[in-house]
Length: 321
Image (cartoon, rainbow, N blue to C red; front, side, top):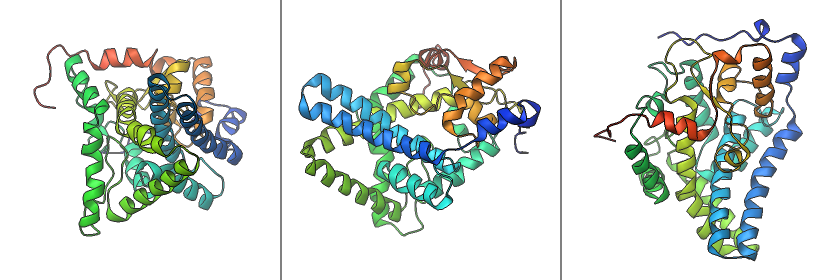
């Protein structure tokens, strides 16, 4: 099938507006990575200084969301948006964002650009994520329970360990649900990076929280918020060739941005329309589309709760999940 059509930004924005939207800041890209890791550090400090069930739960949710944030910043690097120097962009995106959460920037970029080229079309590698929707509420609850009990984590991460004992060419792929990259070399990098994190946690007097927060968050909250993000981006959107309708923007409130959608990932429709805009300029793109009377053509949801209501509108549970 032909690639989906692209919108010429010159037909929408003035030259000054487009120059402002496309302006990239290496300092801001570095700040976003520092912010992700700094937020993780503060969450660990919180539960280390005041260990109790409430601070532990808050830390797990915050760390799990920032683990997703690291994957989102890897996505930013896949579009060349973290640093103007391509080599630094690759290094930061790979080693500070992708590898610690089990991803791989080059592998992710290859499949992700196919997603942009064929969005919501049969050739879209991410179509499997949106095609089953809507589902029933019972079906979603079962999926959420599997996420929060670690079952999804085991399903997604077990191939990483198996890859250590398989030929180099085996399992060389990216899990479409989780961004996790398989392959023996990638598994070794993931384990090495996490060994470094364990040492750093230990040197900071928080060694127990490497397992108690970092790994628990990766095994529970991260799969759930990744699932919600996947649903919000394309579930129950149009499969037509109109690029304005193929992805959804969710108008996330501050709590949703803190615990579900970091780093402007909720402006997914704008990202698909103009995929090389840096993520911090996507809210401005949304505002300009609104001012120009074009936001009505865009699929927009008021909140993530509204998205989940739409995505779980099927009355009868799906027999096979």
